[in-house]
Amino acid sequence: MSTLRRRLASISALFVAAAALLLLVPIWLPIAVVVDVVRGRPRLPSVRLLLFALGWAWLESTSVVIAFALWLAGQRNNHEIHYRLQAWWAASVLGVLRATTGISVSVENVGELRPGPVVMLCRHASLADSLVSAWVITSLAGLRPRYVLKRELLADPCLDIVGNRLPNYFLDRQAADSQVELDALTLLSTGMSTTDVAVIFPEGTRASPSKRERALQKLQDRDPVRAERLRSLQHLLPPRPAGSAALIAGAPDADIVIGWHVGFDGLDTFRGILRHLAHRPPPVIFRLRRVPRADVPTGLAFTEWIDTAWLQTDQDVHTMLESRQQ
Image (tube, rainbow, N blue to C red; front, side, top):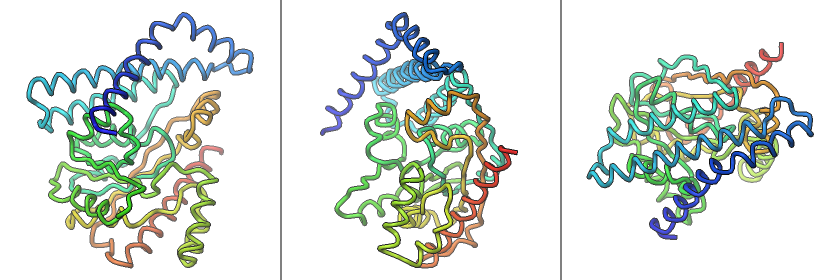
């Protein structure tokens, strides 16, 4: 599908959804309340999720209109103003998430991101990971992210339009020639300044127990040594080292920052979100750890390094989850 056709379809769907959610509030709101009450869910998770969808759709639509206005004004290539738009969008969507669902985010060690350039390896456990990391990087750290995202996210009009005006890369995970994709990641992180952060999710997809078991089984078939090394993972998926190594290679002076969180676990599907919202959600804790570049090897040794780092992060997540249950 061409870029024009894709955007016409996605933007039209967005505007229709935003209008429908707003105009049909008198219909869907009481129905959602009845459904939640009948199912014994006093926190009304269906209502909360639909209210979030309403707020998200209008924020998304507003951002698309602003992006169109910037194009009309000849500012399509103005990175600074688009970074400000990105920061406003992330902070606003997070505000709507907090207001409608009660989910709040607490960030620890945000200073680990400064100064850049850094390459951030981030845990991927929910549909909100890109949003929260963008908010942390832009609003709290005051830096400019360069994201590695899957190509399927081009279905989101904001990510498609604004994301392609900024230095991001939408990875084709089914590419026939993976080297082309890896070279693009190296190019993405090349030339970063002290205000830049390159971000990748090494797991490649949102983690879940079933995905973890499948990933470990595939790894067992390809590399039994790595599979055995990563067998103790309880919360994260085995990292895919090639993309992270390629991104790091483009920024030889960049330190590495590992980012992980607890509180979004289980929010990898809409059904999981409803289950999560049925109870008062505890605050999401987002934590960062910086690793000096001198401590990060290259070549074959990098795979063992990222495996070790991921095992430590998995243990950190486990410890934080256990502390919540006490």
